[in-house]
Length: 231
Image (cartoon, rainbow, N blue to C red; front, top):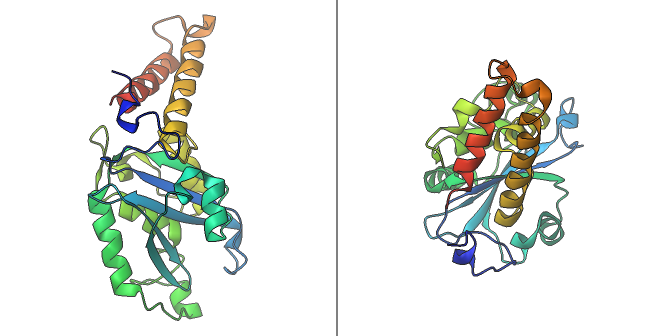
C-alpha cells in the first residue's frame, strides 16, 4: 500500500485527516519583548479528535486559539500570508496530540481575556506569561507533552528543556524529529532524505567498524526514522 493513499495523493496539505499531529512554529526576534526579544517566538498547531487543525499562540499580551483554514495549511508561507505573521521555520511532529489540544483549549478559555504583565510578573512566576517559567516556548512544550509521540515516548523526555529560549527549543525539536517541515508531505520527504544521509555516513570507512561509538547513534536515528515513516 502506498503511504500516501489515505490522502488520495492530495498535495493541498498532505495531512492525514484521521491523525492528531502537531506543528511547532518559530519566528525570529520579537521587538515587543524587552531584553530577551532576540530569542524569538514560538507557536503550536495541533489537530483535535476530528482532525481539524488549530493554532495556539501564547504571547506576552495574551493568548489566541483558532482553527486553521485549508489555505493556511498549504505551506508555511501561505500560513504567514493569511495571518500576517512572520514565522520562518517549523517542525512537524507525528503523534496523537488530541489531549494536548484539549489542554490548549483549557488554557485559552482561562486566559482569553488577556492580561497586563508588570515588570515583576514578567520576570517572575505564576500562571500567566512570564519569562522564567511561562514563556511561549515553555508553554508550547508543556502542551505537547500532554500526549505521546508516534513511538510512545513523551516529547518532554526527548527534548532538552534546560534552555528556555525559543531559538534553542526549536533547534532541539529540529534535531530530535529530523525535519523543518510544515506539511505532512514535507515531513515524510525530509525524513527520507535524513535516512539517506545517515546511510551514507554509515557506509563511510570510519564507521564500518562495529565498535565505532558513532555507529550505534546513527543506527538509532535510522531506526527512529523507520518507525516514524510507518503508516
